[in-house]
Length: 178
Image (cartoon, rainbow, N blue to C red; front, top):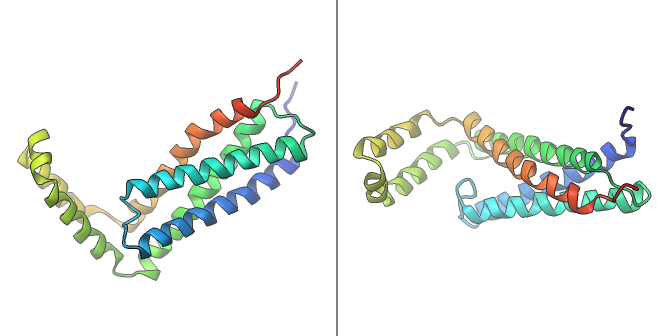
């Protein structure tokens, strides 16, 4: 027996995915213009998880209650979640790449200076838990960081957020089979 996916599911999830991407971009810009360095700010990461989770939950509930007649199977929720977190990750990472390379063309230099300051502030901790060599390796490794690498890292963080949240919402909101 083949599983038949309601075609309205992908349309709804796509719309929510665009909303989630837009919200994460706005959150990034707010943090950036507040001087909070959202690429390494823990609160920014937590905000992304909350936004992706909230939008995924709303989309799954919306599909169950308003599109699919009150019925939600696990695969519905997983499909909705997958579309949302993949769209969010893809659109945000493309925006971030554009931001790094075009909107703020000196971003990579600013990023490296910021990370050197960060590492210097944690030098004693890094050496105590590793070695002087590991500290120097991290410093010299900053020269190898690229805009594409940072964009892919942002993509991965958003995907991982969704991978953890989609199954939870799919289970919580599913309707029992009789």
